[in-house]
Each structure stands twice: as structure tokens, then as C-alpha cells.
Length: 123
Length: 107
Image (cartoon, rainbow over the protein chains, first blue to last red):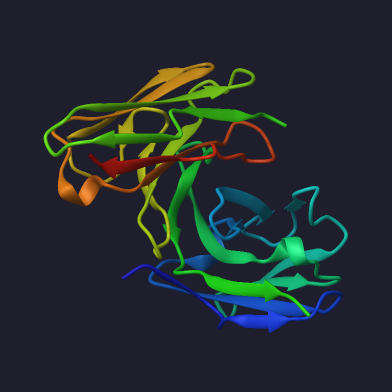
């Protein structure tokens, strides 16, 4: 079964740091780009960051650029999100998602989502 | 950034109804549009990709259409398990933006 499992929930103070992990199973992890998507309580979905299958190409939303770092360890089938200088507005459920491509490797959607991990930034 | 605007934001419907949700993009995105369904406390689930292709395992009462800047998600013969929030996403440009969501509630 194809599965993504994010790390546990966390309560962190403003200005603090946190690293999220996402363990992948059931597919060849190293073949797929991966993203992080978040959802603040009662709000819509927001793309956060993207990483190519090789780990070379990274992309960030303006709201997190310079504070968050996405990475992966293909030998461990794990995706990470290092979150620094956390703010109250980073409070959200964070989802790890798998890329879904067409035959030309154009990204078409996210076909697998983790169950999410809640990050709460509060003093 | 490309903005996606869904309409309506909320709709009330009954079992057996036909519902249509629209997603408008602020600029052309060809057919790089996906639709997701999300139930309370759960992760989103992919329903449709490439604007009109049904993801494996998704019931045929769901359908998608459109290209360029205007897209629709249609559900015919609405079932109790279809009451959820539906979101569109564009994957033509970075950042890969989402619509604000449409909540389908029981009338």
C-alpha cells in the first residue's frame, strides 16, 4: 500500500524551530518529486514547498522563503521540512504529498497525501 | 501568482441532486487543473486531474471539464458520502495555487 506518514504533532513557541518528517512506503520514493502543503485551521490549502526527486531542485512559497528548508533522504525514503523562525501564522496542519505525472513527467496532481501533522506556534 | 476563484463557496444540496462547482483562473493554465475532495479531519483526496480525467477508483458520478481559465466539477446523483469540501488546484505555474474551497452541505 502506498503511504505517507508525517511526524507527530507539535506545540512550539514563536521564533522556534521544528523539523517535520514524512516516511514514504509502497512506491519507489526516489522517482518522485514531493511537496509540503499546509492548511490553517478553518482555511484552504496552501502550497508550501517542493523538492525534485533527486533533491537538487527546491521551491518555496514566498511566505516561508528563507525560513523553511525542504530536503530528502532517498536511502531512508523520507522527506523533511526544517522550519525556523516560526510565526503564529505558520500554525497549520502540514501534509506531505507525492507528485503524479503524465508520460512526459509533467506534474498533474498530488495523488497521495499523508494524514498530516499539526504544528501550533503559540506562546 | 495565478489566483483560482471557486464559486460558490458554499452550497446546500440534497441526496440525488446534481451540483456544479466552478473554478476560474486569473490566467490561462491549459488543462493543468486538479480537483480534490476533503472530509472533516481527513487529508484531501484526488478526484480529477488534467481537468477532466477521473482518478482511479473515483465514482463515475464525478466529472470535470474546462481548459484555459474556466473549469467545472460536476457531481450527478449526489450521495451522502459526497458531502465534503472540494478544492481546485492549478499545476501549470509555480506556486501551485489552490482555490479557496467549496463546501457542499446537506440541505
